[in-house]
Image (tube, rainbow over all chains, first blue to last red; front, side, top):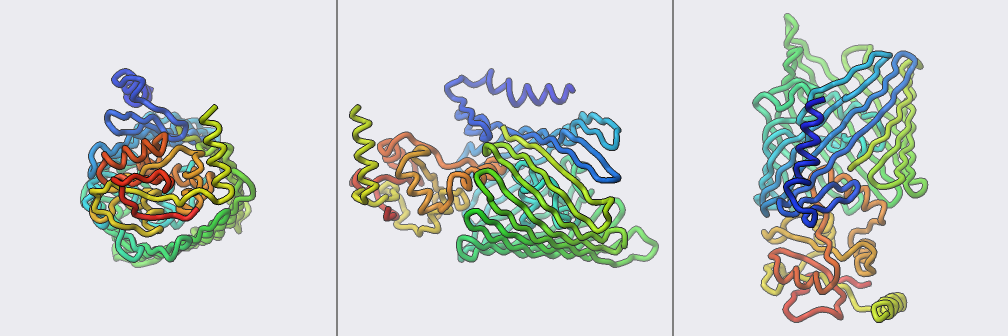
Length: 334
Length: 138
């Protein structure tokens, strides 16, 4: 609770005390602009509920506060602190988490359009889904497995990125150290390298190719991943698909064993009427284990009464009926 | 009352196609000589940050301004709802939307003073010390 109070003090009361009212400008869902330091304070929160035959959970998660700015022409900074799973009830067990994690914390140097450098903890720039994993931005509460099983969601290290001629853009990233808030990631890893190359084909179509390698600490494994993605967007309609493939080297066994994992999804989003979106997604995942072989059809609805909120409901149909899941969430940006 | 009449006449002029082109402008001293529609779109969506080695500072007129509406429709090619969703993502990614200034006069002043600034005005309000880098038919 003390952590939460400290956060509120740092992010809300301190700016109000230090800066005069005239230099502060608040817009709902766009944060508090602090003109003297050319920075913005804001955040978001999510409440979610999930139910299947074998699982039920309610979570107040993703309470995040962020501050970022662009104080110099070629310098930016970004800090996002998060109380993830702040309060949850999972299968009847209540939990109140007090730990604050750094979701993102980096500085950025803009050397040119083609060469920008980021250092710190950032979202791993791979695929379509991972860079927009924040609940309020996503079309559905759940994530496709292409975004969770193939590479670490966050990297603590260096990223070089930029726009190239002929509508190409790229990102390359590397880590060779302990991670910031490394427990708050989908893989515990200290060695990562990878990149993605994207190409725009006109205004409506984007394709991407990615690849990389990383080492998992526990259990000791190495994953080499490759992927591709495509995004087509016209007014009212968005079609997207991603495919990921990884070669897995299990080093913890007496004899090193090689295996693979494969996943893909295809998704369609249609704006039915103002603020209302219908979503259909088909996803596939398979790895060495027969238990982890999924085909998931997700039918969802995303309702945005105002631009800074999202109500979502979805139903995931799976082959095993007991795994079919209903999910709903409300998220709000402030 | 005078302001209302001017606004009504402007709206009428736009409706019957009398209004001039919209011109994208930079300071006369700027190194930027010309720009493509695609580059302009990326600059206003903050996907492109440099033009010819210069850090670009795009400037908007207020939401609801008739010139801005044309720019959103013809340059950004997004409706209001699409733009709001777009800026949601940018907001949580640490990117500020273009600066909003209250009038064409303020845009011209800003463009004169700030290196790399790019704004737009009605061509009828263009002044000699400003350089046109793109002309948009209404």
